Length: 150
Image (tube, rainbow, N blue to C red; front, top):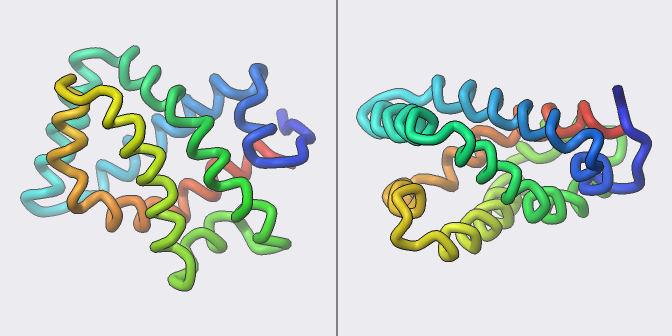
C-alpha cells in the first residue's frame, strides 16, 4: 500500500507505514552488511550479527529511533530529485558524500546519547569507515524508501 504524502518523512513516519519501513530498513541493513568483504567486512558482519543475537528488539528500536532524523535529513533531497529515481539521485557522486555526512550526523547524535552502551562502542569502532559504507548503501536506501511514497 502506498501512502500519498507531501514529504518523504510524512510517508515513512506515518504510523500505518512506519513499522513496514523499519522492516524494510532491517532487510536493507542485512543485504548491505552481507556484501562487505575483507577483514573490516568480517568484523562488521560479526558485530552486526552479535548485536542482532544480543537483542533483535534493540536493533529494531534503534532503526525506529533513527528513522525520523534520517527521513528529515533526506526530505530536501527527495524534494529536489524531480523525476530521477531516489536511489540514483542519492548516489550521484556530486552529492553522495554530502548525503552520507548528513545521515551520519543523525547517527552520531544518537550514538552520543548511548555512549558507554555496547552498541555505542560498536558504532564508535566502525565510525571511521562509516561514510564509505553509507555512500555504498545510498542506491538501495533511496530505492527502498521511495517505495513508501507516492
